[in-house]
Image 1 (spheres, rainbow, N blue to C red):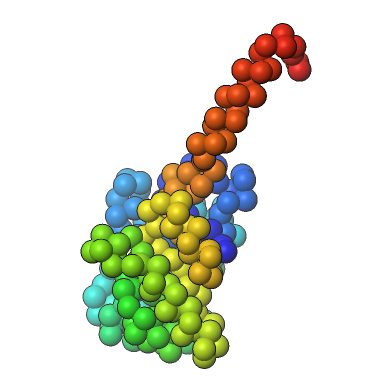
Image 2 (cartoon, helix red, strand yellow):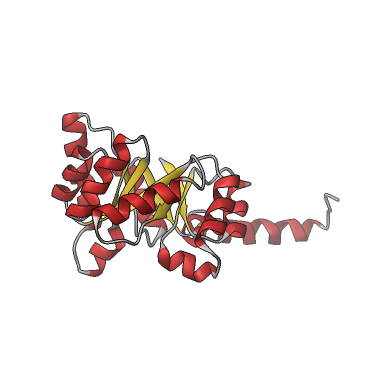
Length: 217
């Protein structure tokens, strides 16, 4: 499973890149706001350090506006994936932009029917939002399973990009189901390394080592 990092924090991206933990980046208006930088400037910097897809989101609500914004965002770098919402206008924009050779990430997906439409419209990525479904006491991972089954049934090439990832368990479950990609904040990716028994084991080893009175350096 590919790891995309969901942030516009360039320093955080660089830290994860150093460990080969970044295959791409997803951004949105909220993340750009947190970064406090011009969208084109920060997106260009991210694209310059990341080889994989970098999702940049349109903000227009009509298809024509999304298409125009997508073309403008795509001028930033060749690895831009234009992000459009899963609305009828978003699907129209997806079809035009994908036909023009752009990578398109169709976001805010909450049903398998929506995911099927996005694949038919030529989406490069479909982004089902796991955490937001869980917030409503719905099973976000069940949506991933349904989309995986449908896409496999018909050979759709659209990649399932599990989004709204909140926990390390979300990452594990997405991988078990067969999501092609999961995008998560840096802190969630880092949390995957944690385990109480690992911490306990280190504590025990260090205590035993100190009792020997030895040093390595």
